[in-house]
Amino acid sequence: MKKDLIFEEIKKKRSFLCVGLDVDLKKIPNHLLNESDPIFSFCKSIIDYTAEFSIAFKINIAFFESHGSKGWKSLEKVINYISNEYPDIFTIADAKRGDIGNSSYQYAKGFFETLSFDSITVSPYMGEDSIEPFLNFKDKFAILLALTSNKGANDFQFFYSNQNPLFKEVIDISKKWKNSERLMYVVGATKTSFLKEIRKIIPDSFILIPGIGAQGGDLIEVSKNGLNNKCGIIVNSSRKIIYSDSGKKFAESARLEAKKIQIVMEKQLKIKGII
Image (cartoon, rainbow, N blue to C red; front, side, top):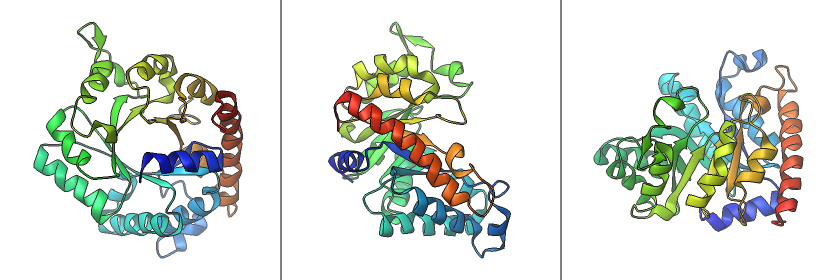
C-alpha cells in the first residue's frame, strides 16, 4: 500500500485510528468459545464493527502463535478477511522481528508475500543488515521500534551516545539506510513529551503510536505533538476497544468506543487543517 492511500483513508474517515487485535481467549465473550474458530469469530466481529472508523488494524502475532498451528490458521483467515473485505485498510503485523539478513528476508517474505500484510514491526538492535530485507519489498513498510511505552524502555533507549539518547540515534541512523522511505516508527503514547523532538528528526514519516486507553496515553497530547501536514500518525488502541464489553453485544460496544476515539481525532485533524 502506498502512503498516499493511507492519507486518503485518513481524510475519508476523518480518523487515524488503528484497532489492535490482541486476542486473549480468557477475555473474549464466553459464547464465542463454542465456535469452531473463536479467535477468527471474535476478530471478524471486531473488524466489521470498527472498520467504519479505522484506517488500520494491528494484529499482535504472539496471541496467534501461542496456539500453534490452529492459531496460525486463524491468523491466515483474519489477514485474508481484511485484505479481501477491507482492502483500503492498512494492515500491521505486530511481530517485532529482526535477525541476520537471510533470516529477516524469510520473515519479510512470510509476512509480506505469503500473508500479504502491508507492514511489520521490527527491532533495530541488530542494525542495518537486519532491517534492509524488509525494505526491499515495494509498497510494504517496516515499522521500527524507536521509543516504547514499557517500563523496560529505560534500560537501553535512554543511554546517551553522541550527546543523544539512543532512541534518537536509532532514528537518525535509520534515515541513511537504503529504501528508508519505507520506514515507519513506533513511539509509545506515554512518551508524548519526546514527540516534538522526534518530529524534527523525521518530519515526514508515519509514526505508529500505541498506548492510548489501557496504557494511559493522552490522545490530545499525542495529536498536538505528533501530527504533521499529512497526519503522519497512526494511533493504536487495543484493549479499550476490543474488550469494552464481554457479553453478546461486545462488537457493538467496540464500535461505540472506536467512534468516541474517532470524534476526538476528527477534531484534532480539523485543528491542524488537514480536513
